[in-house]
Length: 213
Image (cartoon, rainbow, N blue to C red; front, side, top):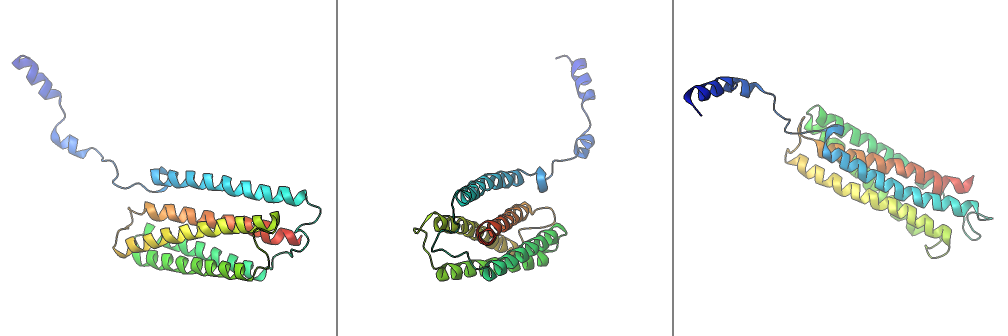
């Protein structure tokens, strides 16, 4: 390359100030633009198919059985499941408070919402264990009892997973990990939490309310 060609090339390059003024990619991505959000959404879609299959099987057996529940099985009592429903709905509200709080940079609100949601969901699990201890039938008795324990037990397992994720968030929040721009994990856990609560509404209608209709 001649001296004239080199001078022409250098003159065509943008100055360093122009390079520094170019916008940079964001360090943290939140909401539906983030890979973590889409990963959680795909996980939820997969779990939704699983619950839909179990509930479809429940109604298939019900509509093809002359008596439902089968003889010797009484429909489940409603007071305790309704109380459990109120607890889960309240926990969803607490998770919304936590998520909205960190979106506005309020770490205290985040920690308070996470702690409240954790306590409410933990009480839900305790009441479910109490319900199992008071149930007069076993999973091996017939198809109705097998589906009752499978559907409610699988949902309880999802609540436990949500509790574990909540606990991890609380530990991270305690170390000041989250701020107004970095809180994708909070959004993902909140999305999963609300999914688990919506599934419970479907379970409530299917397993608890429909046998009384």
